[in-house]
Amino acid sequence: MEFKSINPYNNKEIASYTSQTDAEVETLLQKSQTAFEKWRKVPLKERARLMQNAAKILRDNAAVYAKTITLEMGKPIKESVGEVNKCAWVCDYYAENAAEFLKDEIIKTDASQSFVTHDPMGAILAIMPWNFPFWQVFRFAAPTLMAGNVGLLKHAPNVFGSAKHIEDIFTKAGFPKEVFQNLIVHHDTTEAIIAHDTVKAVTLTGSERAGAAVAELSGKYIKKSLLELGGNNAFIVWEDADIDAAVKTALVARMLNCGQSCIAAKRFILLEGIYEEFVNKFTAEVQKLKSGDPLEETTQVGPLARKDLADQLQSQVQRSIEKGATLLLGGNQDGAYHEPTVLGNVEPGMSAFDEETFGPLAAMIKVKTIEEGFDLSEQSKYGLGVTVCTKNIEKALSYSYRVSDGAYFINELVKSDPRLPFGGTKKSGYGRELAKDGMMEFMNRKTVYVK
Image (cartoon, rainbow, N blue to C red; front, side, top):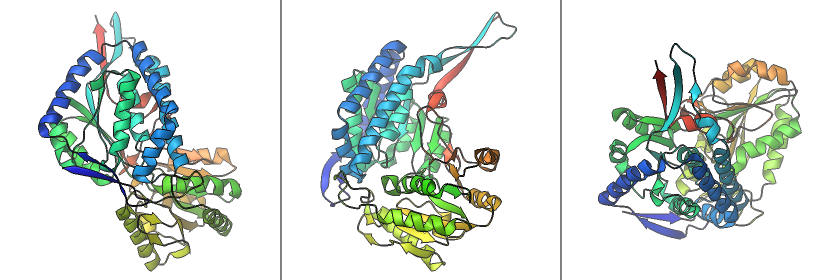
């Protein structure tokens, strides 16, 4: 089978890739197992040195890698450079902190010695998406490889060029070649790979549908799984908020990566006293965004990654308008490009409220009270994160219990940070990435007891 990578901005083919045969995949899996037996014995200090090499390679070649990201999925080039540099950060973070995270935990019992030690599991399969083609992989790979595991990457077919770069980065950094390997395969091979004795666990970032399928397979074969799925984050603005600051934060929260982010702010829940001011100022700022060729430094909004994604967003816009939402800005589509769009008077029951909108669409929702705002925030099958904008920090902290999501941010957009655990609840998945939590997901926490 052949996979084609198409530039969403001009619809031109960038490259094509031939899928690996079953025999080739079997060989890669066997090599992965052999590599693990050696890699797990490599001293942590040496692993850290290699991971720091990877960070340097990322920084030194950020422009090259960023161009591939932008060509493959349309991200504005400045954001692509930022993504690559964030990957270098996560490599450095785990190189610097792995020793502390992995040290034995002494626990006092009736034993003469009792403690928990941390052993790597083996080969971890990562099924990764196209929207952050470097970052999603590195936030898995850095803790996984530092822990002594080995990685197998099944990337999204439209970003196989990014996948090749990532594999090359680890090789150039000095990692043994089989410690991190790409699988160029169709999704119909997923079950056979998960079922293979070499694969000890699987992590997926992607759609709810893909997550359900992988969770089912992981359960069938009794393999550990971690799922980071969709989101429909609420961005709640109270009447005492600094509206100009809130608008500035909201603009990035919604329009970064052309809105193609699971943790993007999608539902703007506004107290009625500031509704008009916020909507007017936000809409005015969206109008200023420069659309165009994502390879140009001044471009802020490029195409979506594929035409079908823009088609889906356009359908959500039109269905919401049919149910009574007001079109305040944008609303048009041209191929894979979708205009930044603002809808007013959005309510539950509309697509813009109920569904995840993966693109530059902001849904404005008016509420009378703070309590109503949290009620609507919770009215979602997803649970990644919530933002609250207010000057009353103590009051906002007192409401954190009202949020069942995996993150609660005050006066800041929800974002991932290597130092903090990241993950969701409900249909947004389970498990945690990043921080110590992310490293522990794929470790055998072994109890050792000496009478």
